[in-house]
Image (cartoon, rainbow, N blue to C red; front, top):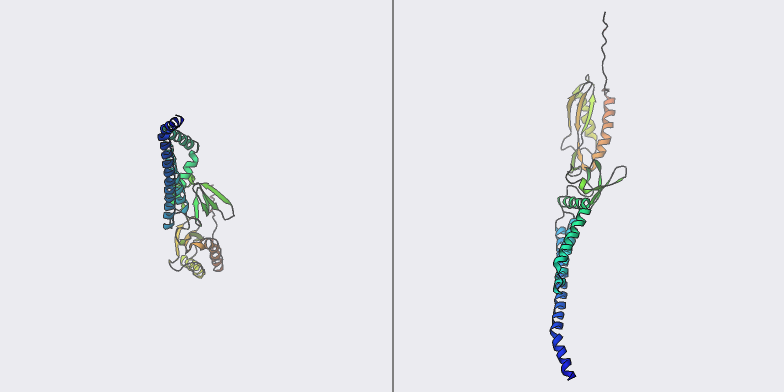
Length: 275
């Protein structure tokens, strides 16, 4: 009699045990397959970034991690659903939590979105000299939230990406060849051809000034007390600041040697005496 009762109890709970075991196996299978898929998606996105050298790896690592976590979220929901857990409330809770976090981190998410756009379109890269957010310096690091500049006096400037994207970006390193604009004024009595010849000789003897394209030296403005020349020599980008800060002194010395006057602003007063 006891053996019959024991067998009856086993037969009674056997379907439940089988169903539980099947759910556990299916949940484990879903979890394993989901982990494999999430890992594959992450690797595919990261390897895609390696194929495109003009795009930053940081962006693809971020997108790969984002895709991985999204897949894992759906996998966890599917696993819970196998055990009869009502996932609708969990999804709603996650949505509300995400909304609250988004509102709390609104500024951070703005920087994140701007960082994604900067890393995708790459208006500048590490090593470029740029002018952004009223700051100028060498780009030392770009991440999803900030851009870090190093100034000439060795200061580190950390600029949020939201202050960069959507505003004017001047990349001084985008082109290999740069023109260096300089202006020099001479007295009205001086011969403009002689002045141009002195400036041309200085530019021709400078080791970092290119012959092609040829330097541009022309009269730009007739000012109140001077004739102003626009001088634009061309050089490789790495020599830009050497030209900018060395050529003016050389031209000043050359003009002095030739006795060409560089006037300072002055006014002439005429006083009339009334009877």
